[in-house]
Amino acid sequence: MKETDVLLFCGQSNMMGESETLLEKDVVDGALEYLWLTDEAVPLCDPIGENIRFDRMPGYPLTDSQDIPNWNNYHIIGASCYGHTSLVPSFCRAYIDGTGRQVLAAHIAKGCTLLSQWLPGADNYRMLVEKAKGAIRKAEQTGKLGYVWFVWLQGESDAIVGNDKETYKKQLIHLDDSLRSEVRLTFCSVAVL
Image (cartoon, rainbow, N blue to C red; front, top):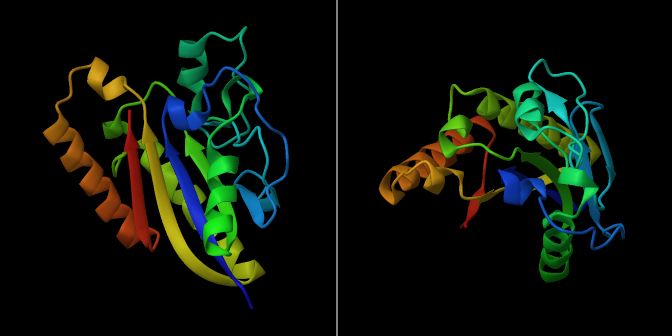
């Protein structure tokens, strides 16, 4: 039985998919996306993610006509902004091409957030853990669980409010350590813009 690696795509606006255009809608062979609201694995393609409110109910998409601060007040995580592309399908395609492994991707991102909002005790952290555990459980139900990756892509929110790099580094290490114990995280990959 082939192993399935769970890739957790987390962060803020850059991971959420705030981009200019929808680059592709092709399904990624060998990859599924985990949807927490329906507890299902669906073919992976753009746009990705799901809009989930703080009360864990389905939310509404962020569109050009939405008031972003109002949307942020109601949503704990969001799907690709404006229905555009994200890095998730391309990343998964390259990962599969390089490793030959199957992937179950879980998109857990929200723009306009600080790293501190993703640390243990915070609402975003609880949602991250809930969705990560759901994805891991789904991978175990459909086959053998392989690696569990945490892929973090932050935007500029922490820099805008003046958080220094040492504080950011300590917070990121704390987040990684916490996820390793709570969701059996195998690897952490970070990109900070």
